[in-house]
Image 1 (cartoon, rainbow, N blue to C red):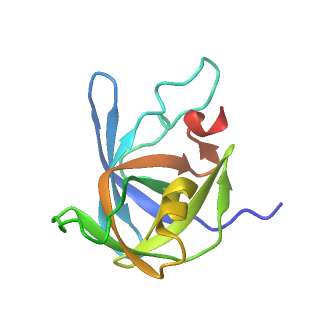
Image 2: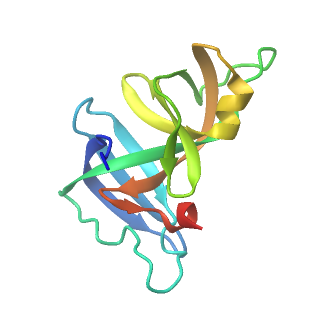
Length: 145
């Protein structure tokens, strides 16, 4: 099985809240800083999570955008991203995801979002948060059940 190339990120900092961790990453190719949620703590006992990540280390990561595409008549806000689909559907655990590009950075959206967008080359996406969903070969437990 051929594993697709993931984007390399360096961990800048990790902040822990009561339930969620916030992982701050720097894209090693574009220099973009990403502030990601890490909810992998909520996994069944014995499953892997992302707690192995260390500040200053580099990892291959996938970042999922959460939010949704903007309807044509909706007002554009400053949190919107201009995205374009850049590849075919991929599998992440048990789920289908679609790679998109925004500002030279690669993210992923759900296949439901992609179906809502249709065959539009470029679209506006309101990203309310970014989640860390894969680090190296470890997939977030939510995508495995």
